[in-house]
Image (cartoon, rainbow, N blue to C red; front, side):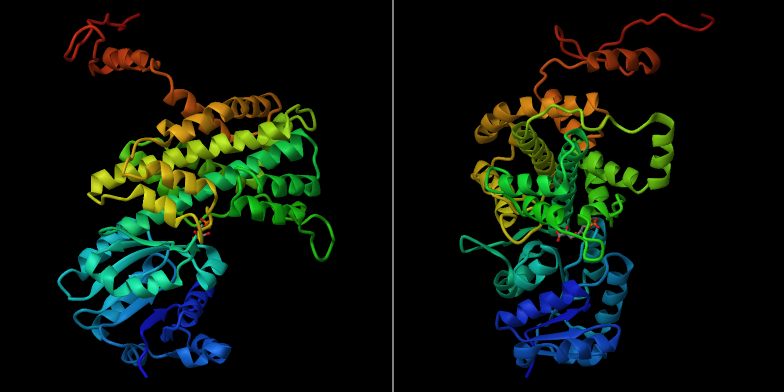
Length: 469
Ligand code: 6PG
């Protein structure tokens, strides 16, 4: 018997993806650098044993695959992916395809395409979201590469993906690094979503003096309304959980220092390079960075004192609406980054399809994404803040965002992401900004020139010299 598809890398994500593939009726061969993992995987496959095979020897693994071969690579992003490709190359043939399913930096994906160009070996860069459970029961899959190669892998990737109202959360999005780029922005939005939730929790905990149990109940309620989403749902569970040993609320024993593996930071970098504002994502990345400076923050508190505790007067309804307004701003930014990247790279990214395949399976899945997909239907890529459904929502919610950000400022509570969202919104709707002054300054010190309201062309002012003054 030959396997329909192969998978390299039996970490939790790889293992679960392999089981998901077998569950969908495909025969899968697996390989892992440490051969014991292959034996353990095959030994634990249970009712799926007749659908799985594998080897701790790469050449033997490759021989198990049906031609043309498809090999999913699910190893740590970065150098390990290059190492696997280098080992696979001499074992593969014309028409075979390597599918990188990790969180690759899309620039690496673009480079790998060009390195494989002319070898006859195809490549797909796919973003897979949904964590361990998603990998096992249906992730959201964002595909980039050549359409011909996508067609070879389409059946299996579609079968294993999450479904929203019967529609597969898997789509071909564009050539080259398109899939990994979209996954990167997904993660950037994920960072912003998570950070804004953490900031609202901060207002509840420090401003309103609420216990984790009380906060948990509020998030459970919110999950029945417009904020209904996976991240709000798990926030409820995290806040409600108790530590097994101490029976304290679990959140109170978890150290407030967040890790980051890179995708959030890459989103912000890409946005900056494209000249598109993604301040909510930047705010979220910055919040993780400052969170990891725990000792320095302790010194800061000794020097300046902590924020004012228990003095805030803000309603839970305002917090809910503020979160919704912040979310709209973050998604507006994320989608604007993708629209610009699409233009620059000639990807023709279907924004409505991206919103659709994020409705289930992925970490940012939510009711809200269904509204976004409807707004982008028909191919428009204009900013979410100008889409009628979101204009109404934003009109309703921006006052609450303002009230919450003001509360944070007055009560000395940090809200980098929510305040960036508000600043973005206020800048976005200010037809007359203040960079006329910036332009004047630039012309003063560097003769950079400026435009005028009343005449066409580039102008300079004759500025006085300050030398000797
Ligand atoms: C997903 C997640 C997943 C992972 C990221 C973010 O979509 O399933 O985004 O890919 O959680 O790697 O990780 P960090 O928070 O560690 O950067």
